[in-house]
Amino acid sequence: MAHAKTLSIAVVTVSDTRTEETDKSGIVLVELLSEAGHALHSKTIVKDDVYKLREIVSRHIADPVVHAVLLTGGTGFTARDNTLKAIKPLFDVDIDGFGELFRQLSYTEIGSSTIQSRAFAGMANGTIIFCLPGSPGACRTGWNGIIREQLDSEHRPCNFTDKLKLEV
Picture 1: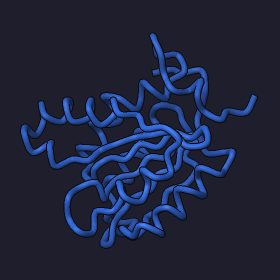
Picture 2 (picture 1 turned 45 degrees about the vertical axis):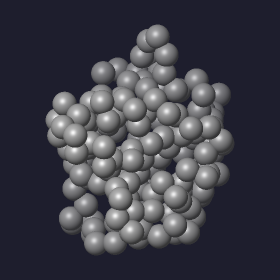
Picture 3 (picture 1 turned 90 degrees about the vertical axis):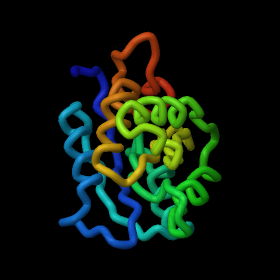
């Protein structure tokens, strides 16, 4: 799908166990954003620790070159799932519809198990942040069903690119 603006996107995998070789979800997101014509700013794996997560995402939010951050992992209900606790306080505004729509799309794929997903999104300092579950399937669902169009400046009737800190 063509789009007028190429965005610089950071991918962050939240995991205590993934390595570059085993990070299937991060690899899926890199491939999908590249296929859509966007530029990968960076790909990082970070431990599921509140303060390490805040530090790396805060750095991306403050970086004028980063337009979007895609996080995968840490959105479940275990004691080590800290993405929501770490990232939501950084938002200037929540994008409530993202989690709602993600779970609706996911329901058609995995049924009622989707209630265990705490996928969410928001904006901070002109940067959009999408937080997805840590499975390749969930990353594809989120990207193909929502994120791709919302990061496409030609998608109508609306998209998020006019709300991002884009260089003129």
